[in-house]
Length: 213
Image 1 (cartoon, rainbow, N blue to C red):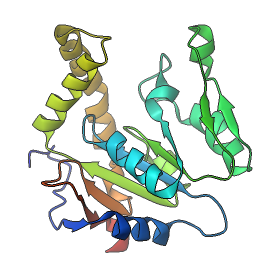
Image 2: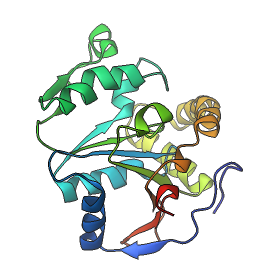
Image 3: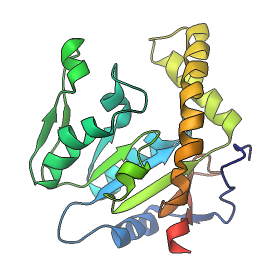
């Protein structure tokens, strides 16, 4: 697997079916309140896919940091997520949040989370140092860099908002920010669980994170 030099190879993967994965997730999450899962990984790694699957199993809700960061900042969005989503949700409130940039750019809709359900926050930097301490479970999704890039570009083009050339240009701009951010923050060193973003079959492949070794 092609990885950045600072990111260790997950190696020791094992396959789990949905029943085993649900049991593992529940092992980390509290029984007396909704749990918070942070799903981190590089662009195109498979974070959104795993987060959606975990949310289905837990009957929870996914919040994407892309929505928090939209027209705001690539990575300087911690305070917006905390004040607008995590803090009211922790108080047991239903969340219906429109980030400031949504208002100023007339984006429709809102970021909505029902009260009393577990939340899965996914995105590059979701398990950053400033947030990981709040998580009941933090996950790092690891994928081959070349494959992640191919998937990321295909996703951007398929959404219809960018041409292939525009997607290539945006990917390069994004990586100029993402790579140094992750190299400095190193979220994989504080997660509880690693997930293989490019599994060889339909199952989920995992390994224990550094905090459980």
